[in-house]
Image (tube, rainbow, N blue to C red):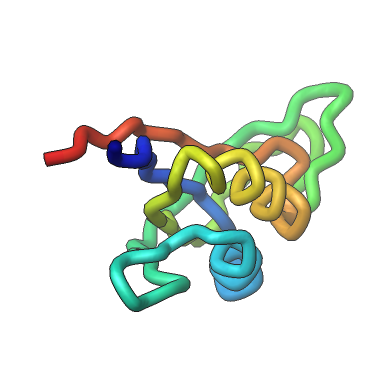
Length: 107
């Protein structure tokens, strides 16, 4: 029986990318064969507008913001996905963490 796998993608300011990758790897993300902490990153620009009631770590309420971010992609097992998401949120600087979880088909 094969274990269900996922790809977790998270968007993080470049200043915190290493800390997020390390936290993810410590709880089981990025295991491929005899390797751990495997990930892929690409850079881009995150944009957001903090509204009333928000407590942004970057920017100000009511003002559009742009931040250079990394998109970090890692593989996770069904057993590790919840811990990886929790570890990511624990070290991520944003009040609201943008992430996607994709189920992977096994072949």
